[in-house]
Image 1: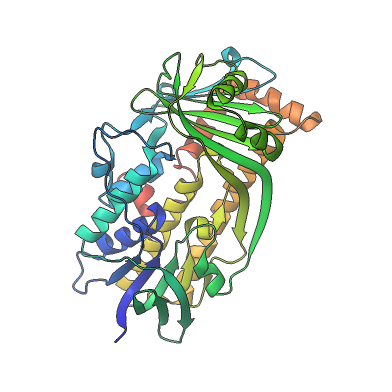
Image 2 (image 1 turned 135 degrees about the vertical axis):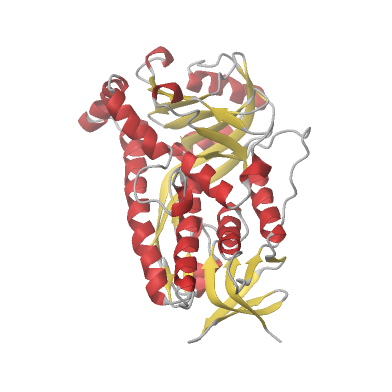
Length: 409
C-alpha cells in the first residue's frame, strides 16, 4: 500500500528541512494536521560541544535567522559553536587591507552582520525540529516519480509514496528536476573553491575578510574557536597548481594571496575542493511539483548567499501553501506554485546578476569597467547611505520577503 502525504520534500539538507518544518509548524494550530514527509538518506547528528569545528560552514543572514527561528531551530543552533561576525573588510589586490571597504554592524544599528554556522549543525537542528513536530523522516533515496491529476507517486529505495505536492530540494544535480522535465541553464565559472580551516597569527576580530584578485577571490570567515574558514575561489589553472602543493607550500601561497591581512596562516584541517557552476532552472514549477534551493538556482559563493536564497525559497513556498490550505485549496495547485515561481525567480535573478558582476569586474576584470568597479569600492566606503543599502541586501531584509523573514511577523 502506498503511503499518502500532503507534501513530500525530497532532500533533507538545510533548505529542504526548513521548508518541511515550516509547513508542519504553520499547520500545527489547525484542526486538520498537515502530513509532511521528508526524504533524506543521511541524517547528521548534532555535533558534540567539544568536537572540532567542521570546515563546511555557511553565512546566515538576518532574514535566515528569523526564518530559522520561525522553524523552531534557531535555539538549537545559536551557541558556543556559532560565531557572529560584526564587520566585513573587502579590498582589491591593487590596494592594501588598510584601505579596505568596511561594513560595520555598529554603523547600521544592527547587533551583527550575520552568523557563521557549520552546515551539519544547521541541518541537524532543522531535522531534529522536523521530527519533533511530528514529521515523517524517511531514510531512502529518490528513484523516480509519476505525476497524475490528483497526486504524485514517488518511488524510493524503501517503496512508493504519494503526495499532493512534491518539493525538490535535492541540490544542484537534482534528480527531481530531471524527473519532472524542467530544464536549466548550466554554465561553468571555470573556478574551483578550495575550503579549509586555518589558524591565523592575528585574531580575526569577528570580521569576515575578502580579497578580490585577478585570478579569483579569497575569503576568511571567522569561527567560534578563533580559527577561520577559508573559501578560495580560484581560476581552475591556479586551483590545480594549489592542489598539487604540500601543506607548507599551500600556506605560503595563502599568505601571499591574503596579503597577510591576518598575519601568517597555518592549516588545521584538510583541504576540500569544489568546482563552481552557475545553475538557473528555466522554470521552478510544474504540475504538483516545485524546486527550491540549489535544485532551482546556484550562484557564485563569493557573497555567501546560496543557503540564504534557499531558505527564502523555503519560507516563501511554505507561506503560499499554508495560505492556500487555509482557503481549502489544494497544496499542489498550479496557481499556488506559479505564485511562488514569480516571487522567487525575480528575487534570485537580481541577486545572481549582482554577484556575477562582482566576480566578473572585481575578481577577473582588467579593462576600464573593472578599474571603475575597483575604484568604486573606495566611493562606497565614503557613503554611509550606500553602505546601508549594501548591508540591507546582505542581511536579506530588502526586497519582497515572506512573513517569517520579516521582523515581528
